[in-house]
Image 1 (cartoon, rainbow, N blue to C red):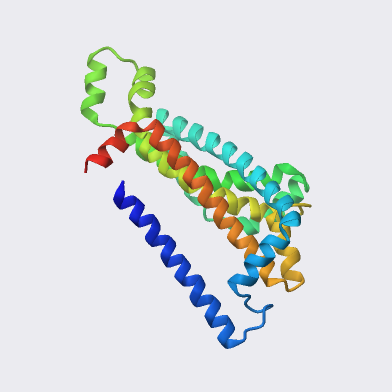
Image 2 (image 1 turned 90 degrees about the vertical axis):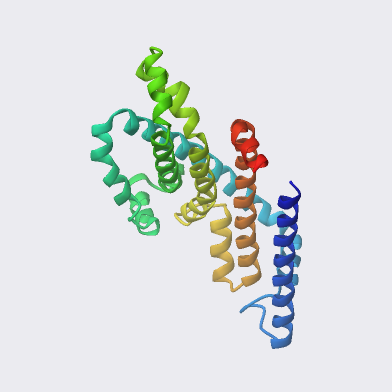
Length: 255
């Protein structure tokens, strides 16, 4: 616990040092604010423009949460089906890999053409971003279940359904949470990208308007907000992991 506390403070110290170097460098070089604003200018803009930015922030958080939930459910269900139906896994797994080679920024305009400017294309973008890490992580977790425990349960008379729900799924939780944490951070990025499709509010819209008017300080406010939201999502899921996977937390503390 003490080591984790020290690591947290060391990371905060390094971040603070980087901001100080950034502030001093901008002031010494007399860099124009439209080219590279100082951290002080970005912080000032974040406070003075909060009433306007908070609307966009709330919209992105809501969209990211909804898309993350849909992506998580779809990813877990996909992993379960592929695990329980081996011949289907062999056929679909390569297609999952190929689906991640399609740039979302290229696919997004097509989704607008097919589904319009409503909520659906935005949710599809976030779901596509989120489901893959969860599916892969869950499949790896299912496969890592100890074979001796499987044999023991089958000898005790467990059927395939009981084997999955009572053994394979619980053992996959550490791997599954790893995928969920990745997807949670991706969901914010996916939400911002999806807002470029024609949304009226959101951080993506805020960034576009700020860039077109050369308000670089607002662009950095949006960037830092995206980072903070991603860290918040990550922290919440980390807490949930420690609550649900207690045996792993206890094992980590004893080492």
